Structures are given as structure tokens and as C-alpha cells.
Amino acid sequence: MKSSKKIILFSSAFFISLTFLMLISNIFRFINPVLNPITVWAIYSFTFFFFIWCYSFLRHNTLKRSLAGKTVYATANLSTFTFREKSWLYLFPILIYFLPSMMNRSIKYISLSMIVMFVFTMVILELFIRLSQNSMKIYFTNEGILINGIDLRLPVPRIYGSVFHNDSGFHEYSEFKEYFPLPNQVDIYRPYDLGAIHVLTSGDSAKQIQGILSKNKLKIKKFK
Image (cartoon, rainbow, N blue to C red; front, side, top):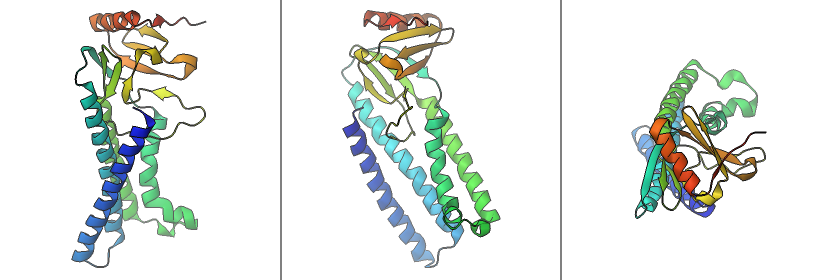
């Protein structure tokens, strides 16, 4: 998916979530003008979940429409998210609950109820991440490779040392250089060690995918 489209979808999800935050905050304030800390943590946590799901659904529906009209030769599952990809999601609950303590360098803002709420939020987030990972699919089409699913990963700008890893979007075969078959996986590499797609497949399905890649001029990677 092009960066400009990612920015548009991200911005749309952000403003929708901001509206949601204002709405839910006003509802709670109408019920009780003074919000206790547990309610505030719950509002921000719920808004965070709303945002990542909103962005993932917008991206999913956009990519789903782009699949229309293409001939799908094969589909497969993908490897799990990396720790770096998940760490960006973990960061937000940490900030929601512990930012006041970090800013004031004091533990007096930390309470038992906060810790319980934080653990509960992290458990829910981990369940969402596993659900997201299981939804990710790769489609080998006549025009290229499409990766889609309920992808909760945030569109974090690439920094030095970060590489492509099962990124959602449409990718032409020409974006890749080589592939390498493993017992239960086929890795498809971008040039200059800029990352790869890790396809979970075996048996006849793996052979079919290798045939599609070879037909589109990708060679078997040779390790030195």
C-alpha cells in the first residue's frame, strides 16, 4: 500500500477515534461530572482499542476492494508479527497508565487498581494481536502479491535497521528478487536484504507457490 494512502487511512482513523473519545467522555461526564482515575484509564484504553481496530478495518476494506478483478492462484497464511511490530502496540497502554509517573519520576501515582487495569488491558491487547495474526493471508494473483487481514500493526515510519516484514498491501512481483523454500515455509526476499515475506505453507501448496514465483522470474536464493 502506498504511503500516501496509508497516511489518509491513518488520519481518517485518528479523527474518527478522536470524535469517539470526545463523545464517550461527554457521556461519562453527563453521568458523573467528576471522573475517577479508573474511568479515565478505561476511556483512554477503550479509545486506543477503537483506533487500532478502526484503522485495521479501513485498511482491510481498501485492500479487499483492490483484490476485485484479479485472478487468485493461491492463498496461504503468514508468520507471526515480530516483537518490534508488537512493541509499538504495547507502548500505548504503558503511556496511558504510567506517563504521569514517568513525567514526575515518582511512584506515588501508581496504585493497585492501576496495575490491575494495566494487566487487564495488556491481556486484551495480546488476545487482539493473536486474532490479528491469525487473520493475515497472502494472495498470489496474476498481477502481484496481496497481503491482507485484520492487521492491527501501526504504520510506523521505517527507521534505520527496520525492514519489510509481511507488510499489508499490494506488491508487484518485481519488488522481490528471490525466494527460498523451507520445510513448512517459503520466504520471499526483497533486494538488498530489505526484508521478506514469510509464507507458511508445505506440500503441494508450497510447490504451487514456488511455481508462481518462478514463473514471475524470481530465483531460488543462494546463501554464501
